Length: 351
Image (cartoon, rainbow, N blue to C red; front, side, top):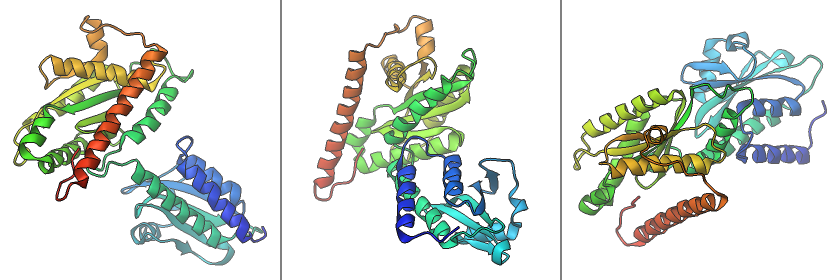
């Protein structure tokens, strides 16, 4: 294959940037297909790296087929490409660095009688990692390190679409569940101890979430003292048990300078809802019931409906629009409040 021109390389980087920044369709398999379509002279495989686990994103081929453990460890620990062999028989290992950590490992081997621009190949992978680092940073809460609302707005519709797939059994009790966790009387903590101590509570609370939930669950700081957890592949009964166990863990935890705090939790199952706003509305209804019935408890929307504690509300287009507007207004108010406090001389950041 003829060497690519600078113009073509620039266009290729531009295309990869658009792909990496897009909310829809951004996954490792798509990245692999992009590499293969642009570098047909290379036999390319992509592996996900999580700790010591290195798993292929496509066919079940072992990394040992291409490189030994020493070369793989060198590539990942040094965060730099490693070339095994020489000439046309060389195999190249290139890490995809996201925030200076290898999230993927790309393996490329030259095909017989093909030419490939290896420098351009490596540059493309580095650029992709840099773009993902920026995107990931925009989806993270700076205080707790959890995902932020932008991540939830992107992932929730995707999950709902997958759960509504015709290939999925509608009667399957195993599904995803969304829960909102709200720290009880958090305003009093800020008023009594100051926002610096309030931020410490939020930071430690985020740490408890990371310790308590599975790596497959999605942990989000939704705004202020509200957090969201999306529990994947679980039953409604198990969802309630897991959330109540976490509630007890928070209640027994001693927050420095503050003491004990409690949380109220509302949750619902992702099922036949058409809009993600409906899911969040049902979760909110369960949370408000938990708050109004004494706090420090877990309430499941489906159970509240079943026992007549709340009534099912059929959401109209106007109601959905109003719900979205209320959420956006609340977010803007909190943002303006943070900006005003941050602008005061000597003031600490607050949430």
